Length: 87
Image 1 (cartoon, helix red, strand yellow):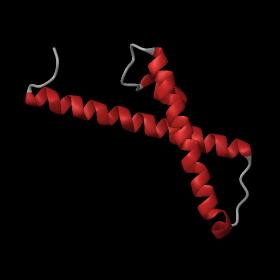
Image 2 (cartoon, helix red, strand yellow):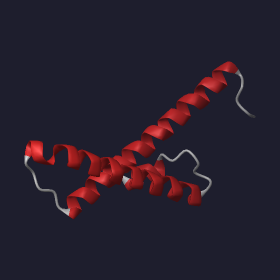
Image 3 (cartoon, one colour):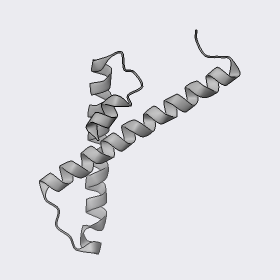
């Protein structure tokens, strides 16, 4: 998933920007995973270990980064259709 994120990154020219975006997405993924665990742990009675939490967070981070890339591609496509895209 991390390799897919690096491959589909919108700003392929700047490796620092790609790594920053991946780090922010990973932190966001950790927060969301911990939120879901806190909300569902007692309800579904499961015990998650740290390796499983890291895998969930990395997967969610890659999903968020790829979705952001797809949104940027769509916005660029709309700008090209309207003739407002930079040369």
